[in-house]
Length: 365
Ligand code: M6R
Image (tube, rainbow, N blue to C red):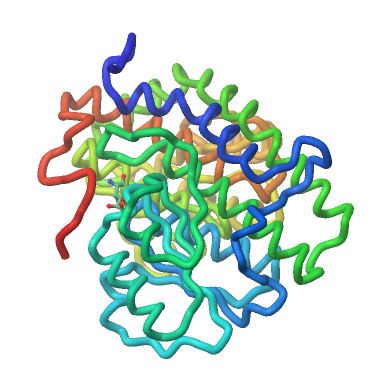
């Protein structure tokens, strides 16, 4: 049941801290506090030539964050495409390549077809699934489970942050196997990961601030989400969630791409939501937001204290989130964008758990 919550989605949003913690604890040894993958996974990251990732919807966005981590942290060439395109592109796949699928249900028809294609192309196939007895789990060489428990709301919430948690651990393990990071870097990043459940709980306490923003967003017809680097997929996740449950048109854009077209849309009626944690790309995003504000855009900022202070002059609204290592920012920043979509949908009176035209599991092409 939903207990004291109005919707399954609200309940599932509150499960983020526990689910992230449970998922991480499967892969982080309590004794050494180091990431270790299950012994029987059978994947030798030192000798993988390339990772090819495929998935649909939110799971695809999780996979895109994973791609970023594999490249930037583990220094493995990585690529990704939505399964409905990937399966028909007939991409040649390399020797010693790893195929990676991400899926809550493990039954999504296009993702399953992508998996089968990867196998035909001689890839070792690893699936990250939430349902252990799923078709994808059965047909994979290796499986990593997200420990999210059943997700009832059609809009994916806790399964998404659990997927990110698994991908972060995988990237750290791969980085170690490839000697891409030092022991000190690994220790710092593992510590940052282990802090995420606590920080996630703090994000959930920002509910009122996010509700205030929801009132503004609910009046809009179009919304732009901007992000960069490992938070660009979080901008797309925010846009997808808003479309899916509030029926407001939204786009997730790479902040630096804005001046190549979408900036033409900006006027006071189009909120611009920035996913802008402090980190190496912050100043770049800040200058894109400056451009949006100069054209009358209402800029809504999700950042930490330091970032919020720097954007004070241009932000119409700000949600101040806990400061975290930029490595783990996508896991944390996924939460407020989902909470925002939830509150906008409630204000609009839509069917939050069963949005129109959508199914929880898309088992037809
Ligand atoms: O079960 P899957 O993770 O394979 O599902 C993939 C997508 O259908 C799913 O993430 C969809 O985009 C969600 N409804 C998004 O909230």
